[in-house]
Image (cartoon, rainbow, N blue to C red):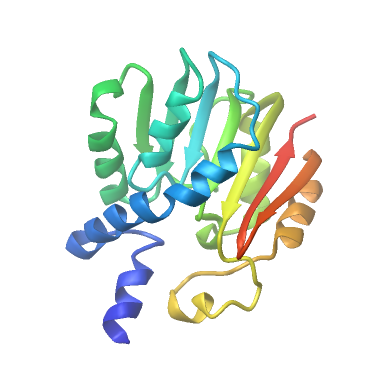
Length: 203
């Protein structure tokens, strides 16, 4: 149990050999949720997009394929994640893909920079969630969208006990926080057994 807890706690901030193993695991296991969630976005060519908590960088590749001529940015609090995301996107790095270390609580980007911001299986670990959502709103263009994709959708999930620093939210809780942050036209999409995508639009 101790080893399992140690492994999954690396979801929040992957470090060392175990963190690298977790990043490979996440790139594979998050694919079905991410691909399903992105179907709810009406992608346009030439978009500028940001993936917060980009982990191993697989979502950056998926975003790039859905918008011709796009620029995709990734940010993650983990140094291991940043290194892995850069390696996975090596061919496009510095041209169409840009990855750096940082926190959702203080995004190092200009106001109104992005058409789309995504967060896949990561909001569980964000500190001060209302403040983070306000930061996402700030960096979005008018009409830009924020898509949160989660698989743990119960506020009292057993995963919260297994993974240190993890806090689970229901889709309705996340939608309420988006509205309180100033997002409009929120929507919730669900897929059995537990997939959910919560989307908010900036006015």
